[in-house]
Amino acid sequence: MLESTLSYIFASQWRVLPVCLVLLVAVTELGYHFGLKLHRADDGARKGQIAGIQGAILGLLALLLGFTFALAVQRYETRRTLVVEEANAIGTTYLRAGFLSDEQSDAVKSLLRRYADVRIEYYEAGQNETEILAAEDQAAIIQAELWTHAVAAAKEAPNPVVATFITSLNELIDLDATRLNALRTHVPGAVWIILVVVAGCGCYVSGYGSGASGARTTFSSFVLPVLIALVISLISDIDRPRGGLISIKQQPMFDLQDAISGEVAP
Image (cartoon, rainbow, N blue to C red):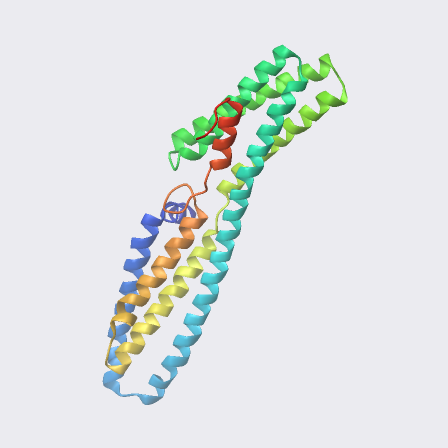
């Protein structure tokens, strides 16, 4: 239940931003009102501890934000690299299909052109589960047909030249599984929970300190929660590139699509 809720919220930065913003502003306001009680009590010893606690929590928050950001960027770079590798694998398989007999070569090249289209459709489906599943099914069907042709070619002409085609086709199929796994792998839910809890504690202590001093500023009561919420939503956007402002460019696949269809991009 918790994991599915987290997946739903962090699947889109447009959900993450308002949820985090409302939560952090609320705990800041709560901390301020509790801090006012300390201000009225005029307890200097307790007030002296606030700055140290606030610094420690905000320092921990900065560490967690940096760690989560690095984790998301690493996965983003992996996904971007895999786009190039998959495009290269399809292109190499397309070229090596020329080693096959004319009939098999034409059939395989036609399937590979369709396969490139389906891979692009898979990514452009965004967060539409129906379109994603349809593209995955189409890719699996085309892979099976390609492998059938590879088996037939190996039986018809079992030589090293045909073996190179089979090797490239095998790499193409493996990269499909690798890329799907990379797109489905995200920052763990436990990391998001810890990050939001620490962010909430940081905002609470910040508001508490303002209340204890008897004076509040726009920065501590609003700007700080907004900045933290923006950073968290940015990380979630990088972690899930199917929707939002940051996406993985499919230009290598488009270039391949133009090349193998005989069209030249302007």
